[in-house]
Amino acid sequence: MIEFFRLMDNSKTSDVLVLGAGPAGMAAALELSRRGKRVTVIEKDSQVGGLAKTYIFSEPEGVFRTDNGPHRFFSKNKYLYDMIGDLLGEKWTQVPRLTRFFVGGKFYFYPVRFKNVLGQMGFIKAFRVLFDYVIEHIRARIKPRKMNSFEDFAVSRFGRTLAEFNMINYTEKIWGIPASEINKDWASQRIAGLSLFSAIKKMIFKKGGPKSLVDTFYYPSLGAGLVYEGMKKKIEENGGQVLLNAEPISVKHENGRATQVEVKTQQGTKLFSPQAVISSIPISREIELFDPVVPNEVRDAAGKLRFRAQVYLFLTIDKEKVTDDNWVYFPDKEVPFGRISEMKNFSKEMSPSDKTSLFVEFFCFEGDEIWNANKDQLFDMTMEWLEKLKFLKKEEVLNIHYIKKPNAYPLYDLEYKERVSTVLNWMDSFENFFAIGRPGRFRYTNQDHSLEMGILAARSVLEGKRYEVDSVGSGKEYFEQGYIPNEK
Image (cartoon, one colour):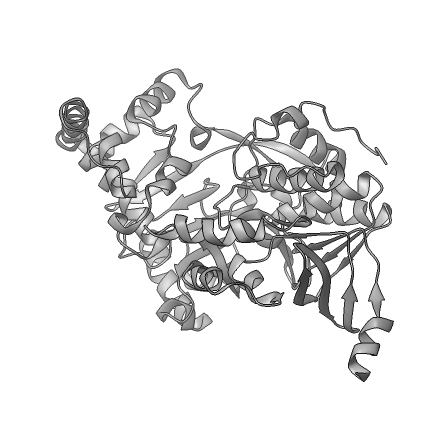
């Protein structure tokens, strides 16, 4: 009873409580605060941005910055560009993209370049690629493949040789399971607009093609996190608050509404009674918070959803540059890491002028060998390959920074869709609770779509009408209204 009265005395009033300060959550909070709503954002970490945050490391040689991996910004949504332009002003620029794959001991540019791919692949393998492609398209007319898995989709679209060359292998490395066990939704979401024809068209005409083939993108001068720090500042200027190092303990509900949220903060436990709750925290964690507890079938479905984790090494380096690439992919499984990014090639302000850095990404599951490896073990694995590729020497590394992130990628296995549907149908039945973002909806979203999700959730609260956040472009009509700075 004493604890009850302590919580009630500590009760906070907000129109909307936003759980999670990633792109989706921050976009929702900004949109609501601009329209005069009192907003409180709850974030477990010590800074905003989620997987799009920027880390800052001050060393004797100067200040080094890195994102959580490469974060290029590209969207067909002018509303988002105007919103970020209002936040950053002159602090973001258009960057030329340079990306390569390292496959079978050779580097290939992506988007592909004719001379490079033919020279590296050779005429025999190039012929096999073309032959398999033609055979698959003939087969599609006679007896189409059943489209159950990523492997089915990739082979049908590209032919076996090309599919295995840099799609199936890298996809299996990301997810840690065979491509035959990965849902076809991953293909339709990530490579739906990509084909051999579109790649050749892009290679010849240098224009057009799907989103994955763009050769320029926008980037903030001091890292992707600058966008979300800018949002935080605007939210606070509009009267909202962002509580860092805080996390929800329970979400109480009654008669189809979320009524109270208990939050653990550095100042103690606080109880919020908001009009609406918007959540971008991992869907499996969210389900555990509801009080009364969720139905058994919902809890069981959530418990079977899996996330892929990541471990990162950020190496600060005593040389002016390592490569000209923004990032390089390593599909071959013999290479322990999956991707490296040289942040200086995104913006010169990401490292001192005479120094550079590499951000190295390892895909893993929580508790596996990579997740449990210490910093020195991962560094030795990394340097074995970076020295072999003549990128750098061990003695050129100034410092090693070690970062671990659970719940990085929602895993699209063959059964995920039904399980997600069971959980989201239950959560979406609440009148004033909105699940958004990559972890919140168990949907692999790019930065721009996460921002759209947050804005649409905010609109749902403002207009009392639930907008569909799972479909790209579902908010087109709303976004066409245009972004009006300082609308409050």
